[in-house]
Image 1: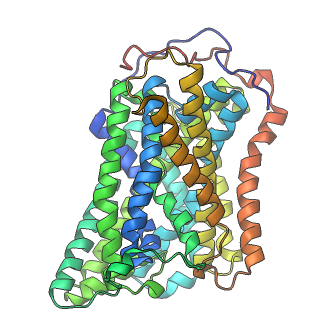
Image 2: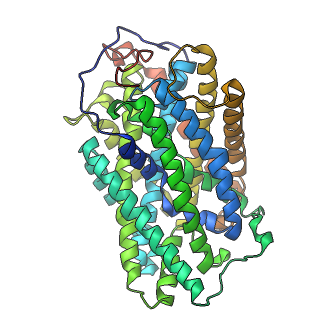
Image 3: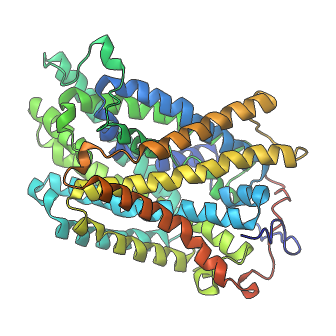
Amino acid sequence: MSDTGTDAAGPAVTPARATKVFGVSGLAILTFAFLANVNTTPQLAKFGLGSIVLFLMAIFLFLTPTAMTSAEMGAAWPRTGGIYVWTRLAFGEGIGFIVIWLEWANFVIAWPSLMGTFTLQASYAVNPNLNDSTAFLVVCVVVITWFAALIALRGMEVTKIVAWYSVLAGSVIPAILLVAFAIAYLAEGHQPAMDIGFGALVPDFSFENIAFISGALLMFSGIEIAAIHAGDVRKPGRTIPRANFIAVGLCLLLFLPLTLAISIVIPSSKINIVVGLPQAADVIFSASNVGWLTPVFCFLIVSGLVASLVQIVNGPSRGLLVAGREGGNLPPFLQKENRRKMPVAIIIAQATISSILSLGYLVLGSVQNAWFMFALIQTNMVLVMYLFMFCAVIKLRYSRPDVNRPYEIPGKKVGLWLVSGVGMLVCVIGLLIGFFPTSEANGLPTWIYVLVLIVGTAGFVCMPFIFWIFRKPSWMANEVTNFETVDPEAT
């Protein structure tokens, strides 16, 4: 791809000052809402006590580097568009568009898997037999997908409210309930379902478990999403770094106890990676003679999941709109906004593609097969995107050393290379281990597993080239932003 349009392609434009929606707490909650997908905890729970080690490794070797990297670049270039702005400045328009496309496509893939989780968790409390009905699942996924898209079109003020509800109802309250009852479960004399010996701290890296590590990384992706909304953030130079590290701390406090609570009541071999949360809740609540709490628990995590979908629509779609306009990467019909400044055409396209992808539940043999393949393809796109992001922070530190950085990765250039190098290494390892089939792929031949993973990942990575081949000068906005300029409220 050409580097055309690496920087400004015209005079800088100072947009009309709009109300800044997010302060530190609001942005931290929005970011945490992206990260706090408690529905991925059953994957880590399969490792039992070893999940503690995996969890800490993921926090310090993956989440922390991505948080520090996005905080540095988000503070230095506080423009709506986030990772697109950074990679465009570092490597040119072509790479910038590929990266923001991957972020958007990542969440397109996320919809069918998240909605599959939503549907199966909702049916678990009513009729668990529906968990094996792919037709029922596809219908529900399509209906709720379009419902979430319509809510997203209401704008960022609605998204901010929804983020708070998503975190409280979908993550915090269910986690507190499950952890508290798990402690009571042990206090009543029940034996934990997991091995609690010292040796159990060493994760089981057997062939059938290794791909779960790659899938578990997905739990900690999305920290960079805060910078996509930089145009709606008050003093982003200070707010983005603080919000990122608050979100990391909340993840540590929420995910680890919840993961162990699942391992305490369900043997590793019996944990269902899709409905592991209500599965654990059913066991714990029944043991405490409060089985009526299971439907309440399911309602909380399901309603929180629907709320989180609204954020999944808004963030990446707005970043893609910026790339489509500023670089002329999308045709005019995909650049349309509604009166609330939401990218209506992109959101509709996202809902349409996600609805089509949901048909994968009908052709991949089982609900768990399809869910896990969606998750792995999504993980691969995230890891490729982060590889570019880590490279960008290094390139920009050298190519634009004089840019004011309100936050900078500690340790000067040694710290920069150490943090970014660790992040890149984890991304490469994550990509490689995803190709090892797990026990969840039973009934799916290895060659089909690998083929679906390669074709699915490569297909989404190559799609931006189609737009690039047919792009025209008329697709570019008449007036574009100079990303080198700094918002006077940024610092």
